Length: 264
Length: 130
Image (tube, rainbow over all chains, first blue to last red; front, side):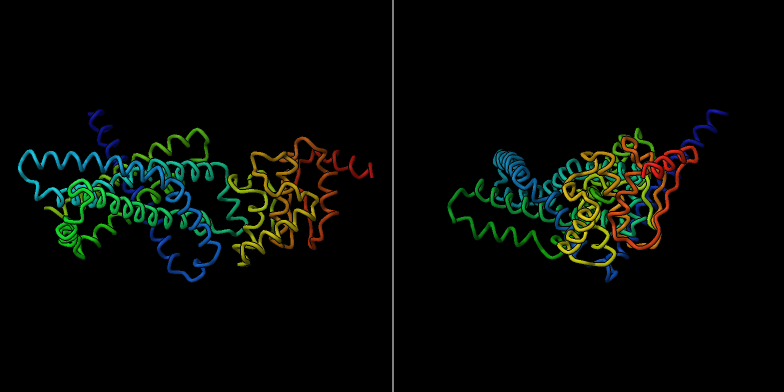
């Protein structure tokens, strides 16, 4: 009986914990959203920090990211093409390539890439700022941490994921064309017609929203996980571990919901 | 009231200049160049112009204290409280050091030092040495 009670108690505590985390994130997002609408937020200082964030998150890694996209795209396109040829489905190869790579795989991998590189860094930095009282010091100096530290990271994350996923998609489209039709221009008409058929308004809007949500997940979750860190230095790795697990689950959940909405 | 205290540290990933320039930038909405100029002027006034580009982990306790003090001074609040300076300036005779800094600044308002009573002797010593 005691074991049952303890199990229920621990399960209940976990569920309450999840709700508390979700509420914390929602409250933080609401605060950030309201601040975005505030006129004073849009000053030169905040803009400069946003530009710096986009530089560190997207521009600094552009060459590595494009190289990685090139390799992944080439491999996936080759697999799809050879499988399509084996099953006599060559006419569907271009559509399958675009759907698998541009709409699903590349945005997902972009989000994972940014999460591993920038999300973990954001989580660690915010946790250290919390532990070292740097946030209290900023508040004492009346420098709003939300405007100076957090909001630029959220905006930078969203912009970075959308632009990197867009660039990766364009590169994959080009690679797809080259793999299917080679350097001949003969396939330009059917290929662009396939692209136009796939990318209707709803699909493009859905893709942008999905990438935006990925961008929010890889920045909002690390920031809130960092802010939850107790003021003990040894809790920083635990905070990063928790934050990154949440980011992973959030990315997978966004992808699953997006697939379900599109195909079910 | 502006406070200089161990529990109000600098932003570790910003230089001394950027830590100070944050105040005019965010509070008085000056541009980045003007904020940096004001911050540099404050460091010049305290006699520590050369620490502008140092970040917190690269500073000596005295340099860190001066940056924190400059950040507090640029707030332009009427009262400045230095809270337990011995915790921040553990390798210099701090009553003399703070007195020297105070004479170099043009700040109006009061400076107050909160310290443990058993350190009173250090302040008496500093007064007598003058």
